[in-house]
Image (cartoon, rainbow, N blue to C red; front, side, top):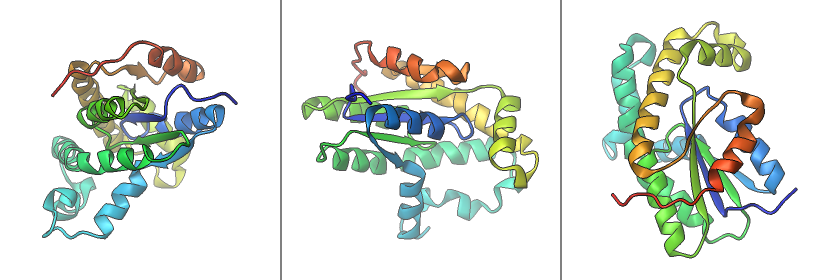
Length: 206
């Protein structure tokens, strides 16, 4: 175990690219606490209604995602992620009050929120870093789904939306100068994240 080179590490990426696994490995290496942002999303949605915060309940209002066109699901995913940006910053601000390093991972971490979190951390004298894991091949994502959720069968359409969302995250990360790393080869991802975070980082201002 080694001392973490960051106080908070944000790991973003689309569903099925391996964020949770790599977050767990990094947390074990650096004795860090893992925050799964999906849990925060569920909590926020549980204590709000579509009338109170419509942008947090877009999928509920749209009906079964399996019945929607892929481009519509992608639009809803992006809109929901943007609506959750204040929640991301809330988690980061809370973790900045704690001395235990933390890894925050989730599908709904946007580059815009991550960049703002890095800037706020820097202003507070804390080391907040962010990285996005990318997998653009829907076939690979479908295989990942099959390995972790065999009871759901082949989820090709979901994988295609996830790959499209991964590409959107990569494009959004570029203006903020945030590192985006290919999920493969998996065996080197932890070391590649370490190397990427060793580089100086100054996210562009909004």
